[in-house]
Image (tube, rainbow, N blue to C red; front, side):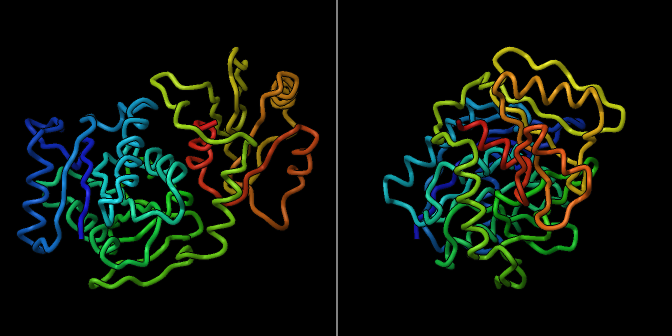
Length: 319
């Protein structure tokens, strides 16, 4: 078995000095040595590092470098799996974009991160890394995954399509509606709701068709194309739509609703429609819905059901 390790920096590639966390060039290799000491290494591997940053400083240009590195590795046919060591802050963006740019049936591409620097006793880096290696060894996982250990000491295997961003002041990761792919406990995988299901294939196909445009990594640049992102709050003021905006991503309240009686909101959606800018609303449930949602059609709002907001944002980034 041959694995490619791609190191990009982030907390998993960092060390703490005087209360400051910063990337260190030797940490990735210390991570592998620590893994070898704990689990042994019965596979061959290669390491590459297209860039080294704290992940909060990521942008489309960095993600394109990562995408190019992953796709070169896939094209080579030299590997049984790929492990990307990535910072937690923008992990979901990179994982989602890679999942959209690689075949759904590709060899496993696992994004591994850590809540704390690897040398910290509270770090979950080695547990996440071990799960990633076992995903590759299992031979039954295809596509992109995020293995991540929460505070219950269980490593959950997530599909980026469903993965939600961590909440403020919390370093756990969850999939929407608990739709994780599997749990990894006692060196065994216990399938979850998103393990190779027809639902996942359907949702993946749906998001690929979202804009009616083909996806392309050429849209990933330092500045990127203009996407307006809005979250709803009571008594909020909708902004003017800047020139050059191509898409608007609007999140909903937890029940899949937004204020559709606000005159300010109506003017905003009217302006977007007149400028031919699609508005995508995430967080909307299928089935029965609240009365306020009846206005979605007249406001020209496109609803996206049961896919994470970040996954939708990443799809918009790609065309």
